[in-house]
Image (tube, rainbow, N blue to C red; front, side, top):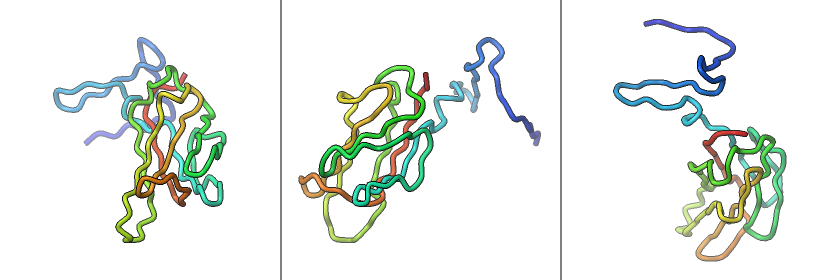
Length: 134
């Protein structure tokens, strides 16, 4: 097995164009790297941990906007959004978190959290985004 130790990777043809191959599949390295994440506490309006998050705007009960430190190249380009509530109370409630891409920009993404069909603030919402930064 070989090992490469480097501080910086730069594409040969274009600085941001680095490809990796796994078997017969080739993809851009940046397409598989999480470029934004946060653990947000809606009840106390605090960001517990984050990457590429400058602030969070608490819009209303159950609704918040994550503002990015570095914007994305194109609106809706951050297509892979993972969002979930990490508090499990075994109450049988139906929890849903939705990212509103239609109401978002390259610099911010709006989220809404429902429990049993009602918007509600909760603790520990984890969000991760994958996409090309501007």
